[in-house]
Length: 295
Image 1 (tube, rainbow, N blue to C red):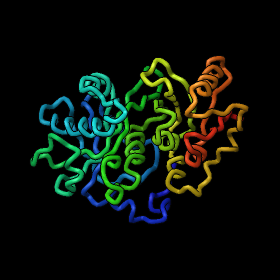
Image 2 (image 1 turned 135 degrees about the vertical axis):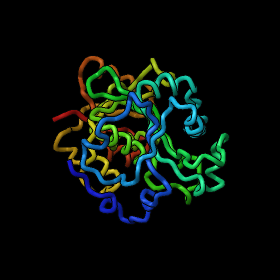
Image 3 (image 1 turned 90 degrees about the vertical axis):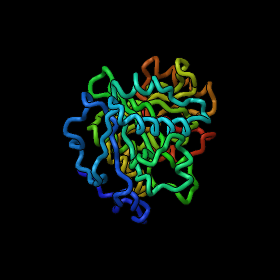
């Protein structure tokens, strides 16, 4: 599958100049036994042209990079009270899966960016400014997206890097040749709009009491870079209506009873149910949201 170049998808190409300056590069933080074979071979994609920085979490020399990843993650999730414990990072992310993202040359960081990191030292050339953790499952070709964040949520608007969070996840999915991606997010989280733009977005649970936050959505998608194009070029058709129809069900994301009703329908096999990315992007969290079925 061939994907359009990024400069053909956005109106102002300068927004993504940061991606190809050499001062920000993609990185992978993965133990040698989990090394991706033939990275980036599933899709014909030229979005990520910089050399990949490779770090080994089993080496003591790379613990400084790990510390910076964790400090970025903790800062991103401290308000939601869901920062990742260090042992979870190692046991549940590093050992079975891998971490990917973008890193910046320390010499190009602003003081505002430096303030995010407590353990930054002068000898650290590259500093992670985004991260995506993804873990393989027992299901064939299926991975679980564990965590996604970027420094954009911590810096002033004029200093944000356009598309950083979205491109972080896109890079990781592309690099590891991932076919099926599952994940979890909260219904009222702004991240839901982002996560739905990586492929056809199936709802596995709409109400999840086994989670700390019961109003959590569990999803599964087949990775499809055509959806990535639509994320940037919003005028492009997602060709959604040819494959899906509106069901009789809708949900209000802020109402637990509404989410429970959909969950009951999922459990009795009335689905599979899907969300439409363009609708998520255009509706408020308080609005009713349509639920779709395959045609």
